Image (cartoon, rainbow, N blue to C red; front, side):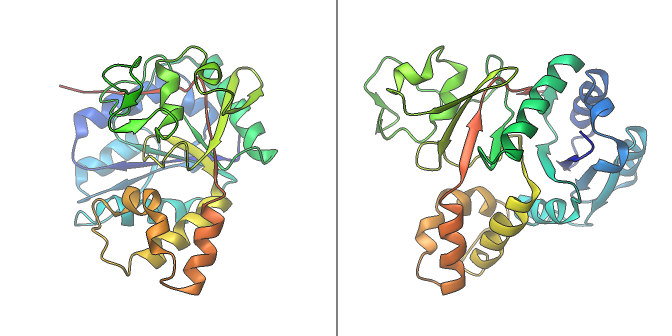
Length: 268
């Protein structure tokens, strides 16, 4: 597990972030990911931010301004020197114990190392937290949020409310078995999400970041641009031959979902 880093993105919500980091420490993630591989990007970096980073033995970087998730994500990935990278915003709480956490990350490393996928979603399957915007109001309906079931673009999100997703989707997912069962698909079936994930660092540095940086030239809002680009990437085809090559690489992305570890905590 020495080849896993975690990069956090935080902005001002000190109470929230303290609770998040405490859950990661108490439930064993910090026994698995060593201090040198834990770092935080703080928007509007403050003395309180630095105190939190030191308290939890995390490195830190940041900016005096809020530079948006797009630019902060790029900075975090560029800092990563290990083979695998976990991206986490400041309100993703670890709700499994050390043993389960280790087994899930062990599976993730195996899936990534054996080239079964490029990215693995780590949102907890049974306790995903809220909001879960991809869950339809009526899961028995043949028409969800304006999409047919076949065209529903968040199929891996369905794991939180489907016991047998491959039966429901007629064998659409690839399946892999380790300590747990995992389901794989592509960007046509599961759109990019900034929700917590683990990925190959090389994939992020060689495919995702170049796509983001090229696309930044085409009317991108720095606060929403990251997710927007990585969902709407095909609209940038034809803008630049180099960008087209990167888009074609990104289009082959394989995504995996399974048990997961973290819940999105709606702190009060």
